[in-house]
Length: 388
Ligand code: MYA
Ligand code: JJ1
Image 1 (cartoon, helix red, strand yellow):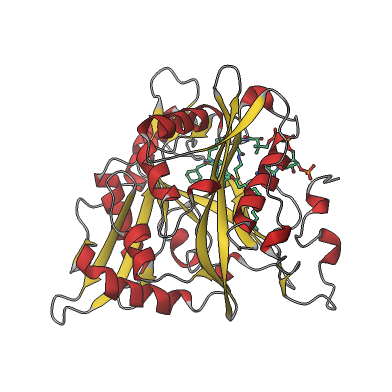
Image 2: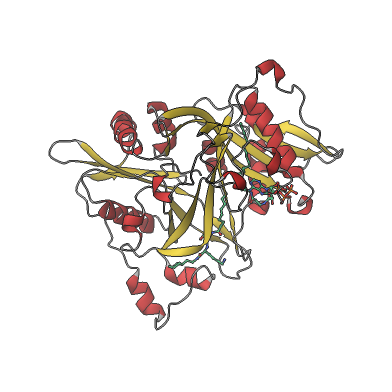
């Protein structure tokens, strides 16, 4: 059934519920001297490259490959359109390895036809923190699909990760392979319902008119929570404390330090927005929320080419009710001209989705760990991890 995945150190479907299997790493690390030194063989027309994503030219090539060939919805109406700035941010966290940003070119034409990337992250699973790779942006050009290139790319990124002495990885995918750690549901909150309906992203509800729909999704012009403002560099220590304390309650979550928070959570225009609530009286930092920007190309619509989409990232509410905090995030997203605000049912998101008029989408997102076994699949609410 899964000719490739059956050969990999991942929990197999047949292991589910087998209580004799212990939680934790599946294969032990091998001595570095035993890690294959040579890259895996590609079919003859292709060659490996390491991508310097600081180079504007390389980044543009990766951007164009992805914007034309990356993830689409099940009816091929929309395609993720990660911006160049986003890719540079996503691939350059503290301690990143350029060797984990891997391209495949056609030898003769030098055209980039496939990509896969990893970045290092400390991920806590229950009481133990593991140095892992987060794998993302696996993409094979549409014309080269179903030729078993993906397994070679996955083996090659694994080899390069092993060479840095890392032995676990985390990733998400829209497809089911053995064996999801958790399966999450996408939820969508319309901000610009007329456009969403025009492009086929959503539909007019039963017994609804356009004007009633527009009214239903109206938001105030400005945020409600006193002390709500953009996060700044000086907030990094306080935000790190807030977020570390909060994430400690989930089964799987990143172990962020101040450098990670500065990289992953400081606002970056058109990439990530983040906000704090600083008590106007005590100047105490009590709440935090954030969303990242991932537009989608609208495939074949005469009127619109792109949809601005905000994705809920990390949110922590200790004083402000989480629902009110997220409503403020919606207000800002609307002001910044986003068309829709997406969220998964991870962490405590269930608690605000319905009240804030999010509706379930037709997409699911499966979370996976490589070379790490959990005894049981997790509930989405036990996940404290959001991958880009
Ligand atoms: S998820 C986003 C993935 N990208 C897309 O969906 C973009 C559009 N699609 C494509 O570009 C292609 O369809 C891709 C597959 C490249 C996805 N994750 O070459 P093939 C397995 C894992 O003939 P193609 C993301 O980026 C499939 O089950 N495996 O197929 C995270 C089959 O194996 P098996 C996948 O369609 C990526 C084999 O590949 C996925 O031409 C995490 C078929 O290969 C998928 N999304 O190409 C990667 N899709 O026969 C794993 C298909 O066994 C990282 N397959 O069923 C693992 C950790 C590595 C590091 C470890 C360090 C220690
Ligand atoms: O965006 C998604 N679905 C949309 C569009 C559906 C178009 C037809 N297939 C959707 N819209 C309904 C919105 C509606 C708004 C008012 C309230 C009710 C809901 O459902 C879906 C997620 O739902 N997205 C995808 O399918 C994209 C792929 C998801 C897998 C991602 C893999 C990630 C890669 C890992 O790095």
